Length: 95
Image (cartoon, rainbow, N blue to C red; front, side, top):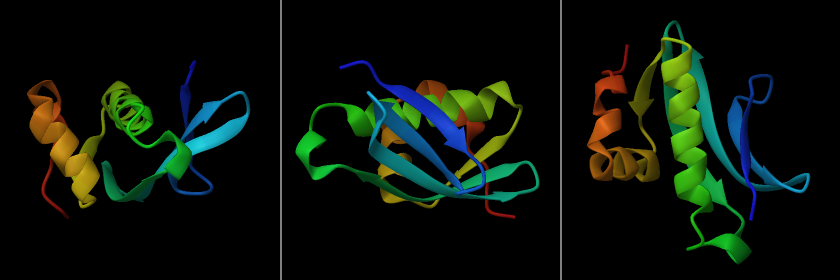
């Protein structure tokens, strides 16, 4: 399954899409140079297929590309970063 992860700033979320269907979203709030991840959700039909992991990786890659910092309030994002220490340098404390 080919996934694309895009930022939808007007909705305050990153979306994982396949064939124009939203399969997951990572909600966030922008606070200065911080992206505060508050909730991650995937379509129940896709759970366990890697959609959530691809979503978080794509979102954090975008955060890095824009020189921002991540605040993982969402437990899924926090656990994902714990399993992928190469992203730990993005983590910031809440402002």
